[in-house]
Length: 241
Image (cartoon, rainbow, N blue to C red; front, side, top):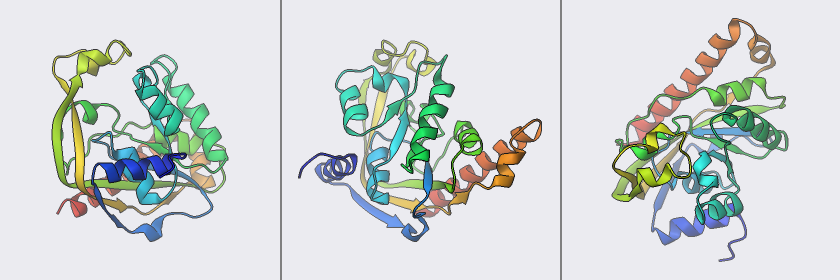
């Protein structure tokens, strides 16, 4: 197989790991639109899984340290096309600028709103943590026509868990991340069988964008974040049978 695209790399990686994927509700995938993919996140395989499930490259926002670690940097940014966020001081602004440019060109952008915590702390397959609201702010403030948020649940049916590397090793590359400044190991979750359940797309309307100002902005952002969290949590319960 010629590994010259993120999608091909994803397919090869999943084949090498002998991972079986079961995809549900693929008819919900928007066509000819800008799509912001939002998903739960427990494994380094999640980006591969989502690209294979949607049969499309996805430009994922990823943690700052992934752009600092040798070898990982070349794979994540050079081969998979992910864009690491800036350090904590400039993280939010860099996320908005890069994501909006990609969405305007109708590239799929992927976000894991749970952030880093579920990656460094072992969680159960049917659990989804609290969502950060950056993706909702992006969707409501982006100057993008025909923008859909696509919530997706990755439900592990069979997996292998193993220690990966010491958490404090990562603090060398991102000292600002408090989660790295603790004892223990970064877990590696390897899916053997996984269900991908695609949620109903949430289309951003001009009315919502107009409400994204003043005191109403906080309410609109909270409603959008809670909607996506509820959709993914519901799909996750359905998938983890």
